[in-house]
Every structure is written in C-alpha cells, then in structure tokens.
Image (tube, rainbow, N blue to C red):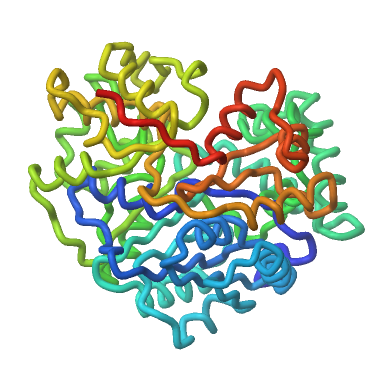
Length: 459
C-alpha cells in the first residue's frame, strides 16, 4: 500500500474517452467558456495516469501536443514507458512520483490536467498535494477534468466497501488474494440477506459480474484504505481558492437539466440560489454516484453567437455504426426522443467518417436545429466530439495488436481522429491479420474508420 492506496497489484489498462481534448473543449463550450487555444500546440498532463494508455492514445493522435503522465506506482510508469516505446510515441514524458513531489517539478504550464479515478481514493493529505499540483501547473484558461465517487449515490455502498477492505486486510496474500477472500465472505453474507449488503448496488453488481471483472479493478476499487465518496459542493469549495470554476460534466447527458430532471425537480432546484448547493441537491434527484467534473481556471466567457459559431466548427464522429444508432434514450427524466429528419441527416452525414457540423448543414436545416440535435445525439452517446485532423495510428495499433491474448493485453483500438474504442479479442485478431471482420457490423465499421476513406459531404 502507498498511503493507503493499492500498490502491489497493477490497475487495469483502459481508455477514458472523457479526457480527450476535443471532448473537454466541447464541455467548456456548451457551458459558455472559451476552451484552450490549441493553434500553436498545447500541453497536457494526466495525474494518476495508471498504465498511461489514455495519455498514450491522445499523445499519438495529437502530435502537436506535449504530454506528461504522473503516477506513484513505479510498475505503472514502467508499463507506460514500455508501451509508448513500442508504439513509437515520442511526445510524452512519464514520472514515477507522488503528488507532493510532482507539485514541485519544473513542468510546462498545462492547458489540460486530467485525473480519473484518483481523487476520492486517496486521503486528504494527498488531495491537498493534488490541488497544489493543479494550482502551480494549470495555466489561466486551462481545463481540469476530475472524476470521483460521489454522494449520495455511493452512500449505500460504503458499508460493503468498508467490510470488504477490513476482511481483506485481515486475510493472507497480496491485495488481490485478500480481496477475493473478502468478497467470498461478503457474498455469503449477502445470501443471508444482511440488510446493509443487500442495499448496496456495488455489492450486487460485483456478485453478478464477478467472473467478468478484472483483478486490477476489484483490488483497486475495494482495497483502498481511503475510499471516500465526496459531495460536489465540497469538491467545488476546495478548488475555488485556486481559481477553478465549474464548467460542466464530461458525462454529456448531465449538462442538460431537461434531459435528467422532471419538471417538479427543476422547479424545486430553481428555488435554490447558491449554484453549488443547487448542484448537490440535483445529485440527490439523480442519485449521483460518480461524477466527471470539468473545471476551467479563470475561464473566458463567450457570448451565444460565438458559442454557436464555435459549435458549428466542431468535428463529430459516430460512436458506433449508423445502423445501430437508436434515436431515443431512457434518462432519469423519462424517455428522450430525437427521431427526426435532422438527427437522421446528422447520422447519415457522419457515417463515412468525422465531419465538422458546418460541412453537413444545408439551407433546409437551421443551425439552431442542427446544434440541438447534435447535443441530444451526443448526450445519448450516439456521437462524439473528435479532432478535425487525423493522425496515423498504425504504430500504436500495431503495439496493441502485438499484445493480444497476452498478460499485457489492451482491448481497445485507437482511431485516427483522437480517441479509441473498446475491441473484442476476435476483432483485434482480425485487424492484426489485416482481415476484414466477417459478420461483425462493429468490426467492419472500425475497419472503415481506420481506412481513412472520406466521402464528400452530403448536400
């Protein structure tokens, strides 16, 4: 353990799409802030980067950026070094250090600092060091992304995590062996209908999905000594002194009250004047259990016209094949429907590959309708904000393919417009062999995105 955080078992290799610069820029823009100016390049840091796969993908697909990854676990950083070398990524630097030491490093002023799955898993001393790092290294106008376990949604999971952690620490073996022993006991208690465990959504998910959950995830989620869900107003209060203002959620659905709240809830929230307390009350309505908060430091506000024109210049990709897009989604407020000619036009236009919105508009579609439907489609996870310029992903995907079926397997495929998507072992094998995935709609779509074929814009 390192200050109560698991260090003897590596975490999972995963990709966090919410940390992509284009994604964060979009969040800032819809909240009325000007995103960082990237015309002359930019600097990006992932603090608590784990194996560094997210940072590696973003670095490989943003050759004009300078990247740094920081993690206290030397095994994670060694893994990140090794993969970046295999993938021939030269614009990223890795640091095996803790937050307190990193705060004193001579680093660039960062346009983006991201931190996924760290802030509510460390103690308050580590959080203070984390904040000192952000205070020193995030430039004015820069964006911070921080995700964390949140209250009130995690309140029912607290007893389960505390029980598993305590049982595990009393067991023999490394952290993974300990957590398996602890879960076995906890599950047997669940079968006896122990009230505090039956009430835990996390306990139920782990019980049902145990065979599919990786050792790294289970160990890091349950064996941390400082597992502490946080209230959003407390997080905001801690970040306000260093000039950080809330700029929305990287969970795009949560940026729109009308998508997640009924009329009665919106009316109640309208009576709360303090915006941070209002956000806390909002979390109670949606039973928030995990937040993807985006902050901006001394951010510059933009007017509605500038925001509209910037959105029209933004670039979008489908999140999956056009044929699998559904034009409705179930939200906490009910069923959100967006099955209309404009939404279908957007999906058809993006089917060949990413495009700027301005390229797919026409005289029959007012810009406000185009933007409204883009926001609905993105909230439903049907389309993603991506980069306008494509970069070669051959080297990074070759490094991924070489690891298939091995101990360091990475089940993602990097896409040339700045992001990555999950991939099955079968799809990785097909792509590695250069064979078109047969009878696999998603695989065929991925192959087409990698081909770089771009069709003319629709009229």
